[in-house]
Length: 304
Image (cartoon, rainbow, N blue to C red; front, side):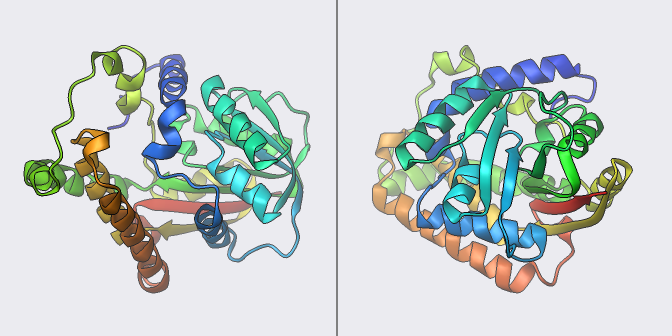
């Protein structure tokens, strides 16, 4: 459920900081974020879809917007696609988790807690500006796009993945509702207890999860925004249909149970099934269906 269109931008930003600071410690486990071979394979596939293929050369200077705990940037560093990395986020808590993971992986980078609409970097500083699942959080997206163009060098690349489409956002409500209906039977079969209410989750920022999303995109509208911001060679593709229907079903079911009651065997099977459906989407559906039908959009453009 996105924030109301009448919600002031400053309020949306405060909600994003508070929610993401509260969620940072458990974010990787909640969303199945991986920094090993699986994570690298996922990120490589997403970037290749956005750019129309894996680049032949790496980007010397890269800026990530809304880095979160580092799913995209740390995997790209491990893949060797980027040289110097500056990871930014509005949430200091997320950047703290990212820095800790980078240290564990032996990766060097810089971090900056900053607003995407007012970047503290000089003009034409980067060869790549990128992010994952972040544009839909930005209340003043045209201003942010102008900043991305400002800090990119001429001919530099813009690439974002994991942005929700309008149709995909609506589609996600179906498995969520369906999973809620069958959740009691699912818990009974697995021998799991219903999740107990935690009063702290309604006071520490977790309750703001529904207020941090601002946009769901129509590909044509997103294309127009990018061109108006001064980008060319705009490329927008759809990603994940079956995988997201299944993923939201599983995530909703698991969210109704006490975490320690969900068997490891179930989690392993569910994750492997999700990866298999990702491959089906990529091989059969994504090349044939319009981007607007998919849950996520991936995009790239060139700074003129």
